[in-house]
Length: 316
Image (cartoon, rainbow, N blue to C red):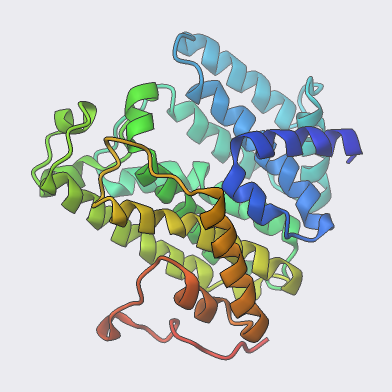
């Protein structure tokens, strides 16, 4: 990949994904440059449907189809990021099917703005989040990709669920979307209209708490696989997990009120998370143990702890 292509991807990531960008800076150069390009490609696709309030659905689909053709090598790329993305896919063996799955999920955002069940949302995330995990794993080139992949998928889903829970207000106001499953809202007697009008209540708090707990299980499953990544990638991925999960502490501090304002992390808070994680990593190279000690994700109750959890000594 040419440096100008990498720089174009880096600029997009730095502008639109500050939390992930901070963690990306700790990746080895061989992975960091590819990550800039991957993230930029994801954002280009995402912005076609997320920043298109006045764009007709047919025009959004046409833009996505043009992007699809360029990403799959069926048309000449008209953007340096897309040129670099195609080279990256060829180099790391990222399959066309994974690209299609991701773009299909982006296309579903054009008309789908509510999810009946968590299973429905999970199906959407198979493209929008899991594919990101698959592609990121490919560029890291772990020794045992088949072992690392299921955990990478769960971590990708955890990151996206955190975004959904953090951005409820923004998604309602800017996109008329609600990613909280209707089944969860019904279980806690929260009318959908209440979310649409941004009315906070104890019932909404309980619905948010349920989804936060579900997301935290995804983090535990995802972090358990960091040990299968190359050693020079483990700390950066752990940092990303700690930083994203820190939003949960902010949400809890606000009594789960994500309707009156958007929860966010200050730069100082991010740097404190970074420093704390690096210090513990210096003394203990077990990703699960460090995550349990420094992250905002509560430890499991003893009766919920399985053999995969705990402060174990790494085996590799």
